[in-house]
Image 1 (cartoon, helix red, strand yellow):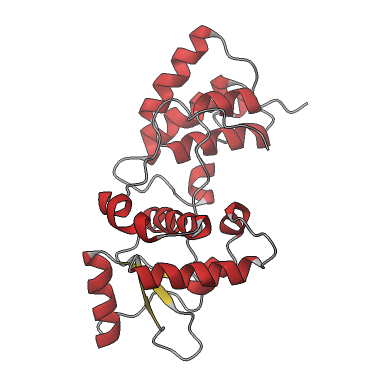
Image 2: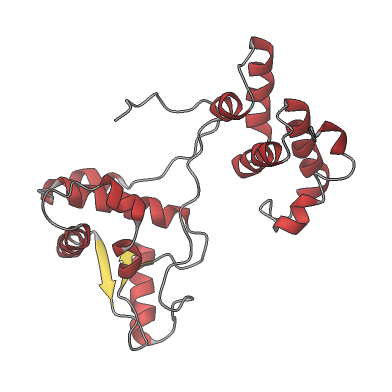
Length: 234
């Protein structure tokens, strides 16, 4: 396993963890897999943008990222996940409820004020989940940092370029920066001038109070036509 190379520079998304997790929850946990499950749940919930945040048990059972971080020993990943979920429920870290429809996967809420309100609303019929049998909101890609993106996809950094990249990282959302690099690779336009053109055009035409994660069709109009000169067609 490759050793950790350090957290990336620039803006890094932080996942909030209540202080009570360390003082009241962790002392009750006696195995590392349950700790890993709890931290993974916190990250999953933090990544959600819907009004009521919850997780389906079935989604955890098939979560490759979760399975990859567990210490499996001789037991299967799914049996370990189920056992860890039970411990998390018994401790009171999460609240579990059955779905409103027959065949629905069980639902987990964080045992917070909002989670308790959501559980009460579910039981009273005032709220129903907005999915059928699965969570549908995968984790966003891990932000590698703009320096890593450049070195992995474009080439070596220079001191002057490093300053430019740092300024771009402060100016644009991570999702747009990552998208611009992906388009540069797809178009074989591996240069900062092309990437910067995408970012600047997004800022001029794509923000304006709108959701920066527009559809592929909407975003593509910013990188074709007038920016074709930066594309290497060889």
